[in-house]
Image (cartoon, rainbow over all chains, first blue to last red; front, side):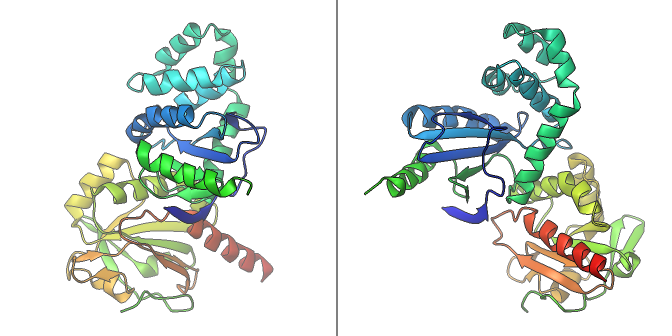
Length: 182
Length: 159
């Protein structure tokens, strides 16, 4: 089930993405590290990535619902700050795997675990650059019709179906089949 | 009755916003206004929808617009829901006579006895500039509202 709303800002160099740059299928998630549904979606996305290895590119954009989830913005900052030292995905995984512990002390602890420069991490965490990145993710999401977290886009179209492994795989494989050269 | 469309004058209403306060549509004359009708407090989809608008509120306010959410729930229910979800906009109770305001906008589901999931953007004169009704199970997102507000701002600047 593909919705009407489309991704208004295509993925680019400022995005965090995994998988081949020119993969035929692109999955973009707008998510919130403190959102329980996103936490449920996390292992499903991992599994989908494994199943579609080589044909799928996966990008994650921040969509923190800060009023509902008081630690969501800080968690997003931690991921971006770790990204500035080349450890974005490692932090991303740690955040989703430890969703119950997203207070500032815990975030610093994850930086230590990732063996990045913690002082630099703390500085980047507070930097306007990181805050701007998160806000621009959020705004691009709003513009694109993100209507809660997680919201997925498949090759630029909002996916309105349920995101169980089976449904998501079906949608992705259908898109993969369409994009196969005849 | 069908959903009121662009160009229609928005019907007036006065509804309770807290146990001892009323809000009227006329209070917002001179400002752009977003009206969000939704089926019920506490139901999971509405919660998501209002949580989204709660976050998007600064983007809405940039356009000199206020935001009101309306359902048939009573004031005490609204009060608890608003506090729990930390909502930063008024929730109006279309409670007695039940659904009267929603009906005037063509945003009432008779069978369910709830407001439909509908959005309206009103200009400073209280004229509907954009309206949208989404299927009850689908959260509409905020992109339509923002686009409508943007074209309103562009029009005002051109004048």
